[in-house]
Image 1: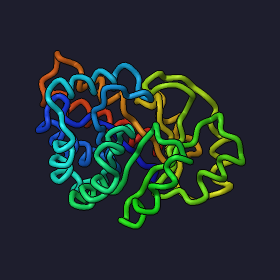
Image 2: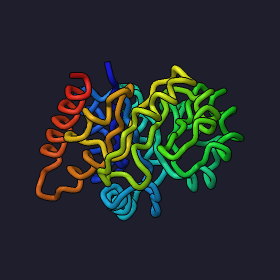
Image 3: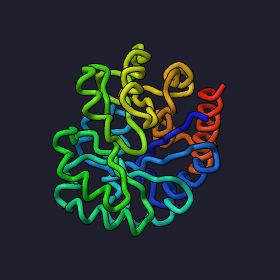
Image 4: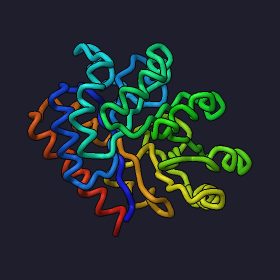
Length: 246
């Protein structure tokens, strides 16, 4: 069965909501949860997730809040922390490793940490039983794909197009998925621009999809109550999980 990874922004619209939403997504077919670490300059994210990041920071989000809510979430669903490298650098990777192990979080997604620059951190992350997710872009050569994926753990994040999340562009990924699978048995998940309308197409040949903006758009909808937001993202998760496995 193909897997569904869901991203939500920690602390938006509130910390309590983050926990409730995470548990609801777990009950709605989501296999892995990306807990986004709000950051002032989320360079890989489009305006939807950027807006949620800024609102969470305005609401007073601190890194300790991420650690606190993760302890309530990670026992119930496979959980990863998705964040930019600046907080990891300033707080110290060892701190994140320790806090992840305390909470039961299984790894990190750091989109602005290139493969080469990640190399010094991988041994300590993996020694702690955690994964640092590797990215592949459609512009990567076969030689670079082989270099990146040979030792990839958990899953490979295939960026569906060059650009930012939520842009909804379309590219034929079959060739690059074939290239990746030539070099590794690690599952390949497609992210960027995946929603209810695109998920089935983007999942072709892949082992799963990663969905962020489609959920965060709902969280930003001020016409909905928190309960309605959770009901809606749960329905979206169920629909996407069903479509990618038809």
